[in-house]
Amino acid sequence: MESGRATLLREQQLKDQFDNLEKHTQSGIEFVERYTKFVKERSEIEINYAKQIKNLSKKYQPKKNSKEEEENKYTSCRAFLSTLNELNDYAGQHEVIAENLTSQIITELLRYLTELKAERKSHFHDGRKAQQHIECSWKQLESSKRRFERDCKEADRAQQYFERMDADINVTKADVEKARQQAQMRHQMAADSKSEYSNFLTKFNQEQNEHYYTLIPNIFQKLQEMEERRIERVGVSMKTYAEVDREVLPIVGKCLDGMTKAAESIEPKTDSKQVVESYKSGFEPPGDVEFEDYGPGQSMKRTVSETSLSNSRGEVKERPSGGKSKGKLWPFIKNKNKSPKQNKEPLSNRFNEFMASKPKMTCLRSLRRGSRLLSLKLGSGPEDFSHLPPEQRRKKLQAKIDDLNKDIQKEMDQKDALTKMKGVYEKNPQMGDPASVDPRLVEMAMNIEKLQSEVQKFEGWLAEVEGRLPSKSDPPRRQSGLYETQNSNSSTVANNCAQDRESSPDGSYTEEQSSETQVKVAIANTPEFDDEFDDGDEETLPTIGTCKAIYQFEGNTPLTGHNEGTISVTEGELLYVIEEDKGDGWTRVRRNEEEEGYVPTSYVEVLLETNAKDS
Image 1 (spheres, rainbow, N blue to C red):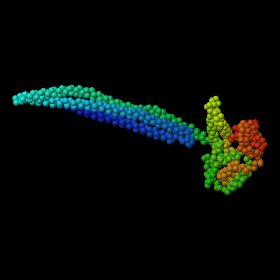
Image 2: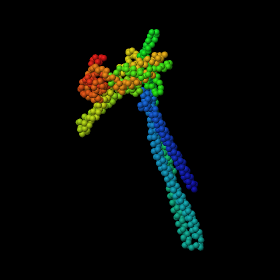
Image 3: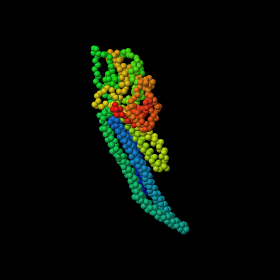
Image 4: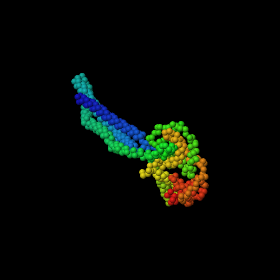
């Protein structure tokens, strides 16, 4: 009985141990799942952070064709742009962190969790199976034991019954023999039950020994190894978690070094020089103001001095409607003491005087320059950038020439490629028709010729500007070369308007009336007023050289006499040059006494006479 109770106690303890192990291993699995969730959330944070950093970098990138893009020539702006680029790379490293966390930790732990759950389930299944087997053996042992006990008691009762029957003299011999046989049968059954019980007991003891010393220890050992592997795997994941951050530190350090280097590359002096170069006008400082004597016996009539500050640039701004335009003086000088307005002569009379005294326009170029002046007054930019100061105009022209040269090189590369393709077609007709390339080659040749003509036109304007830019050895002048034509056209207006100064008691002068007059003069210079000029007084221009037509050119309309326009020429034709190209890409030629006009300079080969070149 004591042995049976001990066995039951051990079975109960073993069952309790399995329950404890099951709870502990389940807790370990839940810990791995919680750590995996932690890493996953960290990865999502890294992705969102990288996205926000990239959006921030993109937000402050300079927009195309904007003022911010133009400011990139300054070192501080370039440093900020480099910082934004480095910040974008920095954000990329956080994306790398998120990718590595996902691939090296999250994915691996999820797969390991699946394997861990399957292994744990298998070990506990084996444990429960072994426990059920030992319990079944124990039940068999208990059953054989109870049967043996019952058979023994039945054999004792049969033996006692037989002995009573054998001692009773009243019982027949047959009844005694029957009782004896019954007692022998019961003793045999008890012996059989004893043998069966002994066998079950031996078997149970063997299985119990194997259960407690082999099967259960092996299962517990496997569970222990499984748990150790789980703990080790969590430790490796934590180490990988740190290594993922450490791997990107060198690149992050390079990004930070790039930001530091960009900050150190800022050069205040260079930026200030860039500002000077950007806004340098090329105008010369004004010359000395001449002394005007107004003493006794001197004429009080005032004239406009060439060194007057109010006439320094020859520019007139269009007066807004309803307002009064103010004469723009030299920078930083304010005209505070203005004299009261006097009654002035009507502007129409001044304009009539100017028209009567102005010389006639004798060429199409003068009309073009007049319209150019009008476009300058109205604020539109001409093609030759003549509305800009000399230095800025030179930069614009040079940039335009560079762009045209790039376009020419591009067209020539395409033409060379098509030429090679045509050669391949000629050698291998099955690959294509060589004649199909000819129209494209002709088109490219025309494009190249057109671009080269544009380059020559802009180079002429550039040469004109560079010739007008003052050198350090030149004496200072009042106006720049860019505005000489405008000032010469408006000199009569300036002299007429100078009369208004006599009516001002303090000698001050406003450019209100002069501005209106100059705008109307500019309008008068346009071709719309061509009918008002008397062309009968035009003089025949002398011949300054000869030229030979390189290409055929179709003029708009043939001209006769003194009418102006383009003229048609044929290839190889010899013509007389009466006016050379002055930067606009056109040369004026004459075929005979009654036929002359303009042709593109790039279409002819000009040979000027020596005295014409010297002049």
